[in-house]
Length: 205
Image 1 (cartoon, rainbow, N blue to C red):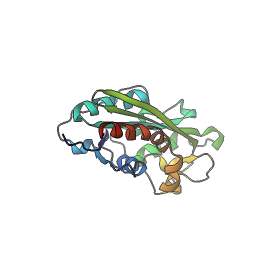
Image 2 (image 1 turned 90 degrees about the horizontal axis):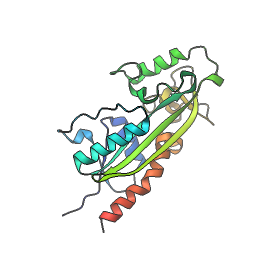
Image 3 (image 1 turned 90 degrees about the vertical axis):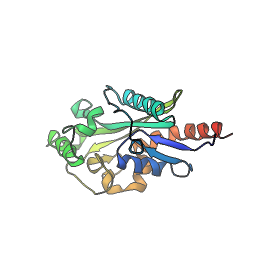
Image 4 (image 1 turned 120 degrees about the vertical axis):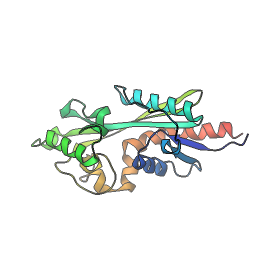
């Protein structure tokens, strides 16, 4: 049987796909997403942690597609809000909320707070699975603070309101080159990358 180097990212989010595809560039593999499969059941993200959701998505995706699958569950954790929005980051302002609506809700909840009370971190958990089961689960984080207004045009999600430590600009102002070096997702992907390489080396021999 001809072996194909294909990796399925368990997401419908094209912004996330572009970012992961860019961070995994150089591996010479074909990246696919759930949009490439028309008959997959819905994967409900009902876990209470990023780890639970990433693990569930990766295992189900690998089982359904019969391909190596990578699932990312990530979000913003704000100290002042006792960890919210957390696993509900994508739907903080409602199930069909836009990025801007989520950002504006967050800013309204932090209105008037000084920067020393606006501490936050991005968290990304990535699970890598094959049809037989889990290969690896990793986590990456990036700490910073929440800006007092929406700033910048690059990226997606909470990028326009998150200022990483060591910088005075938001991710949306810093752009892809810097974000790809320090973001939660890039840190998690650097950890998982060698397991992807090892998997394809193992099955291409």
